[in-house]
Image (tube, rainbow, N blue to C red; front, side, top):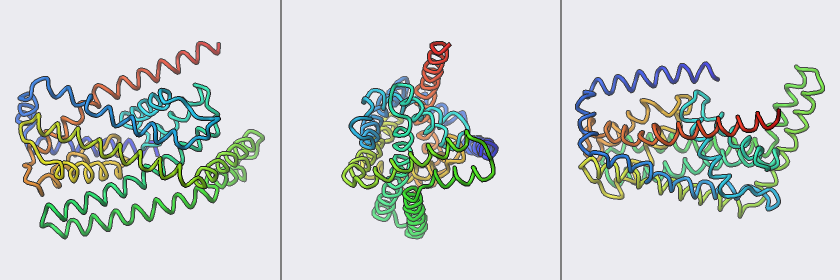
Amino acid sequence: MRFLTQIGLALGLLLLIGLLAWQGFLQILQLLFSSGWYLLLLPLAWFPVLLPAAQGWRQLFKPDHLPSFVHALLALWMGRAVNNLLPVASIGGEIVKARLLFIWGTNGIHAAASVMVDKAIQALTLAFWGSAGVLLLLFLSDNNELAFYAAIGFIILVVCTVGFIIIQQAGLLGILAKSGSKIIKNESWEGIAFSADEVDRVIRELYLNKTKIILATLYRLAALILHTFELWLACYLLGRPIGIIEALMLRSLTATLSDIAFIIPNAYGIQEGAFIIIGSLIGLDPEFSLAVSLALRIRDLIVDPAGLLTLQRVESQRYYSSR
């Protein structure tokens, strides 16, 4: 997986460089600088997205294992930084989230189970969010063929996500662990298999609580909707305001396509290509669409490195305190 993500990173960066060369890097840079320091406000506009996402994740814990809101928020932030900046195929960040909660006192089995269910809810919510974008595309554009293919893609995503949820409830981790125990014969692997069975048990209990699952899904959906304001503000600051409906459509489809391309770290090149293609349907020229995409990456230069540095500090403190 690491090898594939490294290849994906290389291909994504090549695509990004190609798109910038095609439209003219200096012209795009000039467009970005024309907005002055106001573009630095974009990370502040993005931050509220984390709040409902953290609260949604907290729905997936029993009361006696519930982490504090601050701990969930910090773990979400640092996990996102790992997924965006490191070639971990959007999986390493989920492991980091569970590990951080364990370090801060949450039971490890419940932390791992919550991350597994939360990942499935993210995928399902993303599919619904993308489907809403397709409906808005039909309303805003005459390109019914593109909307048709996009709808097929999101239907496939929904089916795959539902399949993943079914496999989770069937005991995915336990199956994998027991398969490994047939190959690796030692006591430590038997312990891993036992822990995996416990995580699977908690996962099944979480899915039985339909109210919690619905609440977690609604919180995640609220986070995706809030994400639209950052895009709307970027267009406004770059001198070409768009309507809220256009912003919702553009944000939902570009974000969904970027997340689907999880094998490419931070969707380099994919996000930019999505903005060019979908932005053209509402009258945005490629140069402006590229500028918007790069403006949204300002938080990647500010928020994510800070997250990695904070994670390194947490791990260092744990290491030295244990010696």
